[in-house]
Length: 262
Length: 317
Image 1 (cartoon, rainbow over the protein chains, first blue to last red):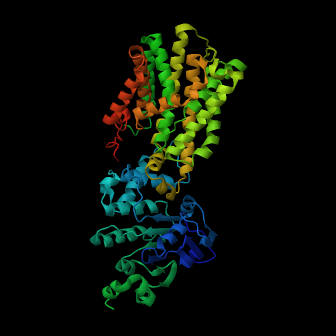
Image 2 (image 1 turned 60 degrees about the horizontal axis):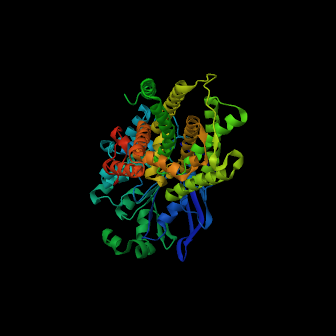
């Protein structure tokens, strides 16, 4: 899981002809994506456009009605989330999914023990080595001051960072971040994204993040996938996507025209 | 200190020494009461294991009954009376059955899990009640146990049984404390909080719940073997829902933070019941109910929260 497996292509993740409908609502309509290893991509689109459905299908929460998802050329379509995590695809959540009654340190310890192939019935969760590793991770995200606090006592930004820190504990090859800056104060968004990118620096992790803030998208992603009505309407560099007529009409609307001064 | 690898063994030895010391001074009726309390405490400990993963079993009487019947039937059919062998057999049969049941139960949560465990125990109750070949509703008598060749009688038998019960309770309690402190133990607490996250971290929730259920069955069977031998009689009531309810009562009274509290709560239940039965023969359940109500109001996380570092801020969270 820690080292990239050999692949016949340069793509770590490929989605081929993915379709998913919830009754009359089409959440994915012939979605085709090929993501190169080490890339940082963002997913944009209005609410209900199919971004989170795509993330949920890739991570096993939803099974596509048809189509294939390949990870290192291996078909992972419909596998259980834990099996996909074990293979090397990890995710964080729009609403941080933490263990509410555990402290920040214990949340990290849970993710560390889960990252082992098999957690032990005998090895203490609070062993000196595990605590040191967990503390080190909290330090990387600069939230070590909160290590002994439970979720109720954590600010929103810290919860987000802890959620992401837990997701990267298993050293994934692909990391999907679902709206990493949502619910975070405007002035904390850039520092939060800087911290995440800094923590991932040099790890060659492929990152895909869902985002509504176009400034964040433009600053941190190399390529943008724009979703509308379950389809990918643009797949290009941030500059080109922002200039795309369909994207401006269906995704960014007038807000980007103003922000971009166009 | 509490993180030292010697902490649990040292505590176990000290608690065992104190319990055995108490055995020398208490009268025989109290020794029997303590033996039964510890045996039932073992079963309640199984519920506590599940409670840590957010589940409550209303059917631990199933394994209590199986342990008791294994001891009774083995003694009657094969002549095996050695308590160590009977304990191993009781645990083994319980674990085998639990391994099968866990496949079904690990997919259910909350009230569905509780009701399914209850129904499994009631199936056994119904089956045993109709099986006249092993006594039906009357049950069957169980021979006095032997202890690795030693066959005591009278007070010596009571003390030997008490000594053995203390020994296995302390060993089981120590092992389960090691589990609670382990990576798997912490994962169980995480499952209680957020099952979805645990799955997305790569751990199998079903596997964690199955292993907890099997551990609970093992201590349940062990408690049943001891209870059957201590009373000298087993009947289908061991699997009846009110018996399982007693174990849930003990588990709620103790909370899931302290193992010592589980046994202490079991002793409290036995003492309150014995004396209430004596002084308020028709209303002793009322006394017990009021007592539980007071504990829930004042200590929502049970008696164990008095001793635990992991003390929570009440039941509101």
